[in-house]
Length: 256
Ligand code: PEP
Image 1 (cartoon, rainbow, N blue to C red):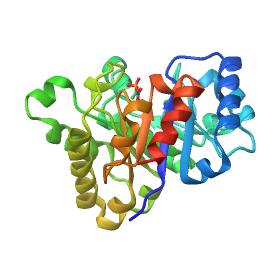
Image 2 (spheres, rainbow, N blue to C red):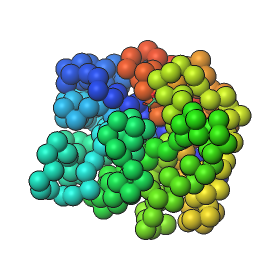
Image 3 (cartoon, helix red, strand yellow):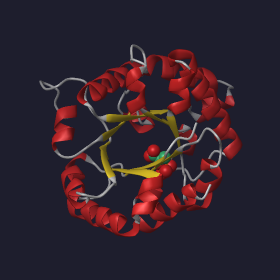
Image 4 (cartoon, rainbow, N blue to C red):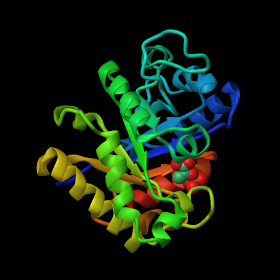
């Protein structure tokens, strides 16, 4: 099964609209049509920059995503944002369940599940993040944690809808720390994750599912990570904030 590489930039709480548009413009100038045929490239600015970034990327193959979505269509949910709102400003993708949401904002597998259902119902393409804490890995709980996150986060999802979904394996100890999982550690987790999805949705769905690695991926390590059979790209934080490193990383990922 050949899966198209997908590299997504998670800009987190960085970039004003003008700065985001400038970065997006650099990306569209530097990523050739050939590269964008081989790799799906997504940028996920903060909510306030989505519109400007989508405008800067109009007509380009680079896609725009958001970093969160609420499960309700509208209503008394101060500070939240709906799938339709995101679509209305040009988002096609949305990150769900990022570990920073889980750690700092009380995100649970149940809320991930609600957000995932709302995103799919609205036609947004979810990038669902899972991954273990350092202590969980040290205690030998990695697979149990991943299994719980998958079974909770994906409860009640139709196998047919899985074609829209991307999963990001992001070991929490590797995010923003400069510590990257070795290719062997990452591939082990990715293989386990794919097997879990096979058990839940069947082998064809699992074979087609794209699973990104995230956690201090950079140009220097992207090639060896994406060379692993079950790693289909990356979810990139720090290295996505500058065109030079993000473009280089994409080239390295494709050179796998
Ligand atoms: C992320 O935020 O999803 C991430 C992987 O960050 P970083 O690349 O900075 O570790």
